[in-house]
Amino acid sequence: MSLATIDLVILGIYAVFIFGLAQWVSRNTSGGAKTSTDYFLASKNLPWWAIGASLIAANISAEQIIGMSGSGYVIGLGIAAYEWMAALTLLIVGKYFLPIFIRNDIVTMPQFLQQRYGPTIRNVMALFWLLLYVFVNVTSILWLGSIAVNTVTGLDQTYAIVAIGIFALAYQLWGGLKAVALTDIVQVALLVAGGLIIGFIALSEIGGASGALGGFNILLTEFPEKFDMILSPDNPNFNELPGIAVLLGGLWVMNISYWGFNQYIIQRALAARSIGEAQKGIAFAAYLKLLMPVIVVLPGMAALVLAPALSAPDQAYPTMMNLLPAGLKGLVFAALIAAIVASLASKVNSISTIFTLDLYAKANKAASDRHLVTVGRFAAFAAMLIGVLTARPLLGNFEQGFQFIQEFTGFFTPGIVVIFILGLFWGRASEAGALTGAILSVVLSGVFWWLQYADIFAFPFMNRVGVVFLASLAAAVVVSLMSPPREGTMQIRFDGVSYRTSTGFNIAGVGVILFLIAVYAIWW
Image (cartoon, rainbow, N blue to C red):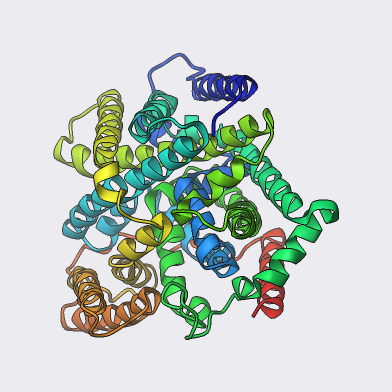
């Protein structure tokens, strides 16, 4: 399990190229110092292709490639619901959420909360997102990325964590969001190519003379239960994907929170040249999501035949990489590193944005643009340092990293969705109601989790998310009716907001819906 000289050369070429490209595309052509808009929002001039590619690059990282391949090894194709349902969620975000955000010149999600509800909820949620991004997102990418590096190269995981952290930090530290977003088209192209190569090679290895298609048919024949998209209650993995709730329940809450109100995701669309450009980027990303299960789930399923005795599911993808010949292994490994680095850089950039604009700038109103950019760079460095130091202690004992992330974030996502959905579409919603929904979300989630942990009441976490969302929504509505918004707190403007979308966007939406109907009809 090591890289040949040609593999190392390919990896080195990638590293030098992507680092140089990031610095070049993010340079300030006017020769002046970067402003906060340049650094945190890429000068609000991103084209659709950069938005779409960057959305996927920010999303598809170690927790997706390594984690979802591991879940594909254990659960099967059903885990692809996260990817395929996300495509439809993206279109909903583009049609109904983005017009309001862009009309109000929103830069960060906490900023929206202040303009809609008031300063208290902004500060609470800004702090929450900082903790979540640093201690869940950054650490999970570093840890799962280090598993891949260790499995393929033999490099000690501690050294791998440090190396990934340093490169991802250096890659985006100077250029900010523009460095990340404008290079992500290269990162995504490499990711897709690498994923397709490893899937083809793995299936061809299974199929022998019958090729990749024969290998797929062997998988389908030998492991038919792994192709169930809707798991029955007697399935051993029902708790992870509880039947029809995948389509009608908590997964919608998880996806809407992630794609609609997640700073490191939505920040790309907020940096668009126009609402039309943002929506085209969203549609592009939706179709890339439809392709992702081939890249991140299929290799894990192939490992059922090629590596049936793995010590941990998250070793599935790196193990499949070791089937590749010299040269190809370097290319696919570079693709994996590209995904890890792009996503990690995105998280760190968003941490920097929230800390600087939502906390530091509010406390230091006289700070200049240049000073804020400097603070942002220090925040990025601090976030990465904390992630490197805490990755192993936090995630070292979990077998399926992807499921850990979903389980933990499921404590908070119901409350987040309640806050934003009411804030976007119900004028009577108040800060008291929003805070009630957020707090109740955490409390109820904790109660359900404890009941399951104590073996008192088994409740799949996705069902828990759905039930907690409905309870938190009801509580937020009741409290808002009892305690209406204070005078002057509602600063979000809805005049000029249009939910009409272009013909191309609408056609893209129909295409996604038809694809989902076909997939679930075949593998129900």
